[in-house]
Length: 111
Image (tube, rainbow, N blue to C red):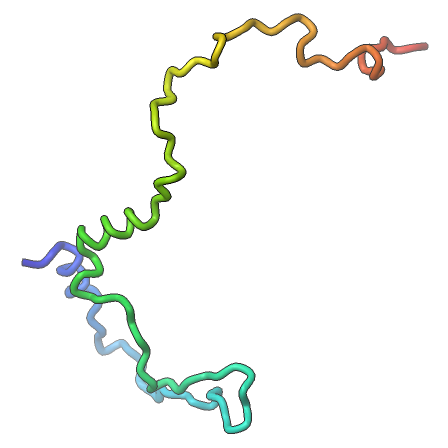
């Protein structure tokens, strides 16, 4: 039994006759003897693929990814919704948050 994703890929990811033909291997950029700054491999060299296509889209793999991605040390232990600050809430005073008279911002315009 295959998933809907597998069925979709089978129907839509098939290459047809509209694929351009030509030389798909171009090794002109590969490292030559004596060039050691940045090694570049050939197009036909095998590439290690860490993804197993049989299990890549499974619920188990996705659950494992979530488990590895969530930092458990960063999660608040208790409920915070509805929590009140210690000592309760207080009404702000009339002058709270306003600049003092010494900074000149409350001075009236002079003519």
